Image (cartoon, rainbow, N blue to C red):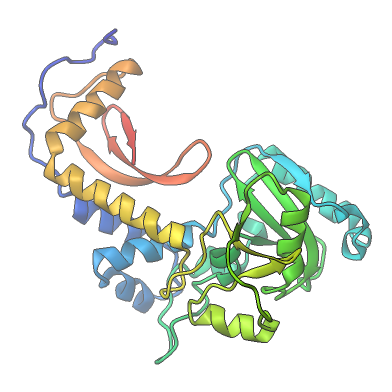
Length: 309
């Protein structure tokens, strides 16, 4: 049924927006940097690198929506949890309610979406390699010194709480062990059919991560890899995020080539939501907060009609 005020006419033929330019401008606008020099350097990147770098930062945020909180087996008995029960409980309640956790993220996640790296060094404050390889976030706990962090995996609707452990336990095997042994059927990690030998030490693992090499983690004589990230690329972002960045950019390019179809879909969404479609539509690309994730969308500014990418 057509909503009141919604038009059933063909696309208006209004001037087609430059979606690629809008997309680039939106990423530059939203991405946090600590200097104008860094902002300018990010703006100068080609659109493909801009996209995966932007989405690498976006993946570091924890989308605020209510989640079922599941604690790993033995979590409540961990010494660091026992010593900070009230503060940890308060944070878990906040996660369950869907509060915004931006204040519990590292300053790098909040302020350093892109940085200029030193010569011959491709990693820096704009990469969370623990997250990119294993899909594990680390949160600061209010009232607890920064030497103790909450390690967790977040997916839409659920939070899997692994441990409260010291800062910089980025390659601690026990984080993967907690996920595999507590939720074997949830598919957070998957096994790989390989012949296992002696695994790398934690120091070796850190070096391999910084080179963009994924390392299998041995638990119960089986090799495991994150099903959420599918490991690292040599650009230090997760394989899955690299794929998602390519998908989004491909969708923007397609919309630019077939603008009438994009406008037609927006008209349909306007009609379904009883929004009045303007005579002169003004369509743009925006970074938005969806129901359970941050994403991009085409938005008609006058009506508010939205098409999630």
